Image 1 (cartoon, rainbow, N blue to C red):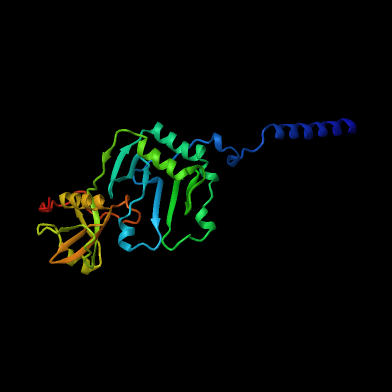
Image 2 (image 1 turned 60 degrees about the vertical axis):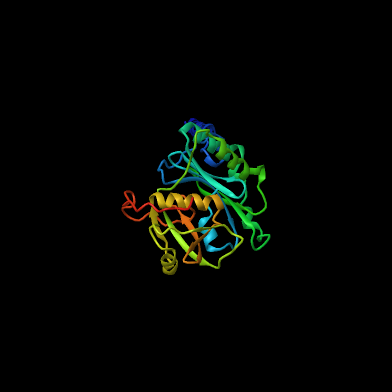
Length: 278
């Protein structure tokens, strides 16, 4: 009887071991090819962003510089393109779920996003005014940003930017409905283009510059100002009472560090239409 009991115990141990070997614990990190990519569908959630900053640039330049490409949770895609001889335009489109998922899979699997190092954390900037490019992804595997001063493995930054600009042939020029305007008084520079500030504009440049605070504007005045600033990449001088001013525009959730829109800005009170120079 004792022999049979020992034999039964031994069989039980062997059977448990065999079952354990047949069903190992899953390891999600070891199966990246099989995961299903998901993301927050909120239209204000930034799912992917390409950005480029210049070290030690002026506060005005930093505020005015837009991220190169941003993809939002609802499929909205906004990107910047260079327009000769010295301007830029901002475009937007929407991606359906299939196209958006394919785009994210291209970044994660084809470009091996999670294997790309944060190169900027491993070296000093090559110069005091070096350009730093960054790529941010915010999906089910978490939020991650990587940066580089000198280029990317797999040419990742350029590859993603090119796909941003070509992924959907249906696009429209982006013009914000409302934005924060910061004004800086600067010495008048004869090498820069200049335009007179209209008397019918919704604010005086000298007043906003003296306050040191951003002013919220909307409507036609903003659309005209936005177009001038984008066409010159912020190089334009605005002349008011023979003084020169430069302007920075921040659009909530589009610009890098913009404050949120003020309460009630969804239905702004129409301002008088300014008479802009032609």
